[in-house]
Amino acid sequence: MKHHLKHLAGLTAVTALLPLLMGVHMVRYRVDRARRAARDGDRGAISIELALAIIALVAVAGGVVVALTKLADNVTKKIPEDK
Image (cartoon, rainbow, N blue to C red):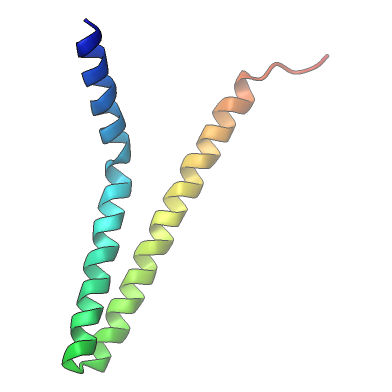
């Protein structure tokens, strides 16, 4: 039974981290394309790829802010008020 719970906990943790992992792969992909464009001398592609990488980073940062805000709201609701 303990083995099943550990396995389930591991799956839950991996599932929770999937959006973050997707964001990391997206940023790596965009940065790699920008490096290839720089190596090939394609300046227009570098600008576009860097802009897309920045947009991806801002989206990931926004997701983190939203997650932290929801977590803070949940914790605040659980704290009893002083009367």
